[in-house]
Structure formats: C-alpha cells, structure tokens
Length: 227
Image 1 (cartoon, one colour):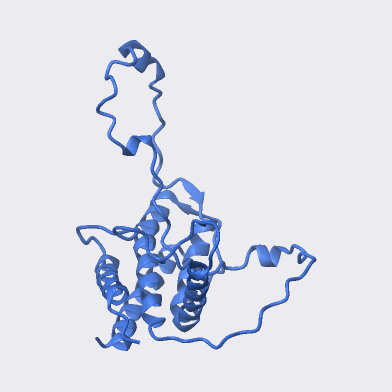
Image 2: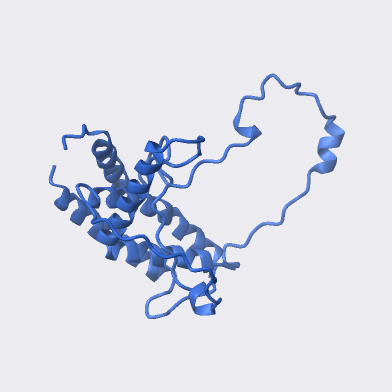
C-alpha cells in the first residue's frame, strides 16, 4: 500500500472540503463570527462530523512506523498559570479520539413494558406544541468555528498530530503493562462500529473520503505486526 499517496490524496480532498466550509460560514478574510443562520450551521455540521472522523484516520496513517525519541519528564509547576482571555479563545487541539456513543433506556428493548401504563388523557395533557424553528434564526456558532479551525490546523500539520498520537500510544502501552487496579481507558482512537458522521448513502464528497479512510485505517490497525 502506498501510504504517502493515500495521505496526500485524501488530505487534499479534505482541505478543499474544509475551505468550502469556511466559505459557507463567511470566514473568508474574517477572524471569526459569533452566530450563523440555523440552516448554515446545520449544513456545516452535516459535513464537519465525517470530516473530523476522516482526519483522525489520516493521523493513524501518518503515525505508521513513527518512533519518537524519549523526552525528559516535564517539571510540574505548583502554581497554576494566570487566566487570560487570549488563552481562553485559543484554538483547541484537534481531538484524536472519536466521541463515544451514549446510550439511554430508550435505546434498549422495552417491549416487555406494559403499553397502557398511562392513560390516553394523561398523554394528551403532557403534549406541548413546539414553535416552528426558523431556518434563518441566528444560533451560537462559537463552538462550531473552533472545531473548524482545529480541523484545518490538524490538516496543515498531520506530522505533528501523528506525534501526538504516538505519544498517547506510548502512555497507553505503559498503562496496559503496569500492574494495579483496573482503570477504564481508551485503547484505540476509534469507537466501536462505524465512525461519527458515517452515512450508508453518500450525499457529499466527504462521505466517500471517510469511507476510504476508515477502510484503510482498519486494514492498518488489523495488519499483523512484523516489527
């Protein structure tokens, strides 16, 4: 498998997609925006989730065979750094991990529960009509914009993201080898099953990119270790 070619091809495709998202958000030549129309926000989220998943899998490609030199331990400062608005507004590091699924009781089979637990009159009393949402209503976009900037930064520095992943893998391996009480921890950057933003039917170019990246990442992670 020509991994450098696969990285370059999919990174170029994702860069074009992310640039289109920035243009859709009206960020061309603008530092940031505070709100977006509801339909624009929804359109960006439709593409942002699969794009983030694809980039996480690109980082796995880039980390293939990467070995870092041992670094001296960092000193832990006793005093916490002073708060500043500049640090609070700084673009966060790109998340290397798929968000895990959260389940509630509605996700499980409740067919054994009695269907007539509540009277129909009670059900009618608790039904509340919700106002229709305007597609042009402004919604808060601060978190969305930070995710976009974080995604673009990760694409521009895949090697740096790969180094982050390798450092995490080293800490994970050390924790797995250590003895002591069981501690809940991630052992892979991917969540079980399909990645966030996956769609069975492609409706955007990002779906094809995610499909290819996910398949290649699984092949890489499941390949036998020949080292």
